[in-house]
Every structure is written in C-alpha cells, then in structure tokens.
Amino acid sequence: MKINAQWKVPPQISNAELFAELKKGAGDDGQSEIAAALANAEVKLEQTYKVAYVAHARWSRGGGAEWTDGKLTVWTGTQRPLA
Image 1 (cartoon, helix red, strand yellow):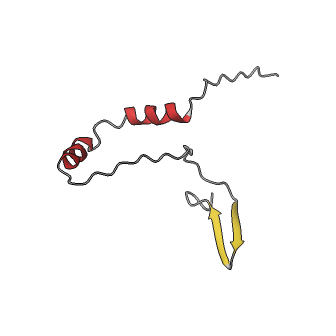
Image 2: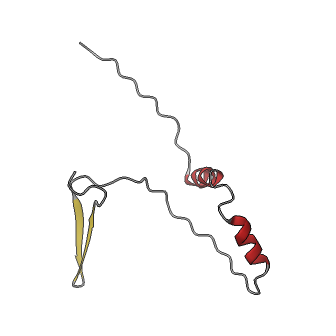
Image 3: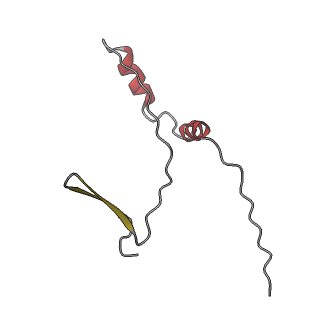
C-alpha cells in the first residue's frame, strides 16, 4: 500500500517580521509604567539589541564540549536529560 503524503509549508517570515509579530501579542506588558518612569527620568539612555530567533527545542541524547585555555564548556540538553 502506498501513501501519497503531501507537505505544504507556508513561507517563512524574516527575522524583522518575526520580532514585529511577536511584539503584537505582548499587549501593554508594563510599557505604560516604563513610559511614565522614562518621562520623569533625568537621564535617558536608549538602545535596541536583537539576536536571531532560536526555536525552543531540546537536544536529543547528545551534546557538545569544548576545551579551551584550561576550561571545559559543555552544551547538553536539560529539558529531559534521560529521554
């Protein structure tokens, strides 16, 4: 028996579009309190930092390690380490 599987993937949005989309669902999220505090601040510093979106996903039974300058850095899954 053959299965005629079809997969339709919608177009992926860019990082800029993703950040805008994620902000839509945030609501006020305390922004009115922040705006009030900034309005009364004597000194105001402003900067925006963005990093690429990374999906929340665990590593499967694997990991990685790097030994550099006498220090060991280990990357491994912590969501379900025994899964």
